[in-house]
Image 1: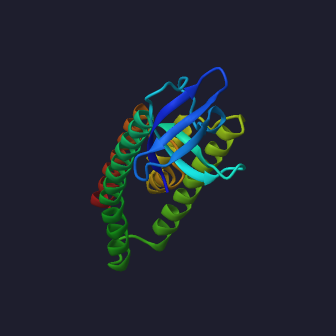
Image 2: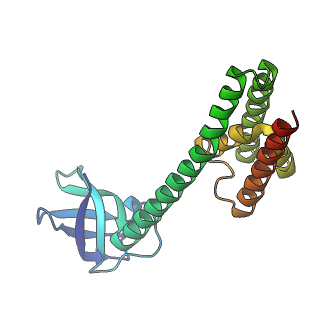
Length: 200
């Protein structure tokens, strides 16, 4: 459980002090080494948030300490990020589900062959693997997959695999310029698929 408290005594030259927990009014020991993020040095009167454990001298000790202001800002950033991810997920479902359903209907009514379904399955698996491999390369400082290659895979029908990779792997999901080009290639592919059906 996280507790909020006020730093009532701080000895900066020794790197420790005491805080009073708002919920229980208990006095807890605070040490500089137990701050999760040292954005600045603590001072008397700082509002903190922390976990409480039993110390070695049977006193209560604060761990995983954060400045309350920093904690609240991080929480707001996380909430905005979750909202953005939720919006992307909804947009992805709106785009992908109707297309998949259309493919199945076209197949069941004999308007496309099973090989079209096989093609889409293969190209999307390849695209997902390309994203996965690129993320692994990024994490290990190895040679990256060119972004144009990823866009080309989407253009040729692998955009659903790209969507799944972006959301599940959290890769290329925040880069706005990449996302714009990705959706452009997706729209172009769907248009050409529609033209193919009309001509067929």
